[in-house]
Length: 461
Image (tube, rainbow, N blue to C red; front, side):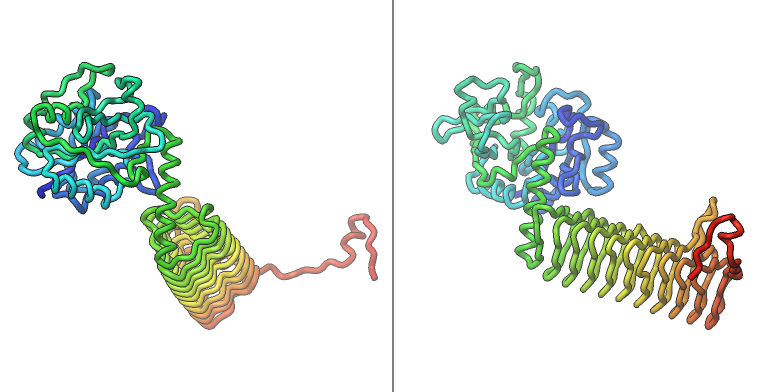
């Protein structure tokens, strides 16, 4: 079966109370529209999206992620039937089937659509409608049947009291033979409360003309949870996150206190890793096997390789952490941080554009920005790489097997050679050669009986 898909995403989503079009609000870290596209992509030859509000920016966002997608604009909001007419060039010469669906179904699955398409093919449907039975049908269009024969789809605002008692409702997902769609799309009228052209009227038009119109009922109502306001957005987000966590746990990931854990859709976690809630894992984060992620960790768009331990309340963004590293507690790894194998970054250490080679230890209270530190070097508590001169950023280069004493400041641009030492409390403004000791301190002076000279008593033992 040749299949194209047309996604209706031109609605303004006024109930979201947002300047952002509804379909670009995120569920489990992915815009609603993108989740819909992902679900149908494995089944279709081509996909077109009909956009409305903020067309130029919206089009750019879609094209940036799905460059092969066709984009059409519905300039006036005259209903779903009018939207489908706006995309007529997409299917004007196509001989196959057109899958039409709304762009605000963030929990849609490939399996549910595949089953719908397969049933339609088996029944040789000219038009197929996918319905479902939610616990509460309020707000949905009702599918009216006469026995097993389709009769009509009635929007709730236009439904009679008897029709509102019907529990079989419309998902907004249809399959049409392309030639029948383009021949009859202009037959839809706008004699309704909204004076709009409802696509929901087209199946009844086709049925009256003797075409084979079929209704199929989906098994899992959750797949068709729509989003019209922030409350429904939160419900969809929770459902998507729950699906994600269930899938990970069944694959061999331990998640403790899962109700307190957020793991977004594109996050990857390998078996035998343990996540202790509460933890937030965002974006394209990837965590390999045998890691431990402790409570309070927040990780975004980062790679954490085998056998790492991320201790409580550490924040990691756009960083790479290689095998056997320990981070935290309460460490902050900012974008551009790379920790090679067996690095230890301890409590209240902050890094930014920092490359720490194998075995480096920075255990306490340090800022390491715009720096590279060689293997097995030790960074004492309170060390700062002073990388900003008020106008530009500069780099600090620290060699292998270096010892930086506590409370040292390295004023970039500066380098410290291999096997060098920096004495505690030093401010280093010039390069330190290899195999040397650099100390920068004022000579200590002791003035005896200082309190007496200030007119105070001094108790001496």
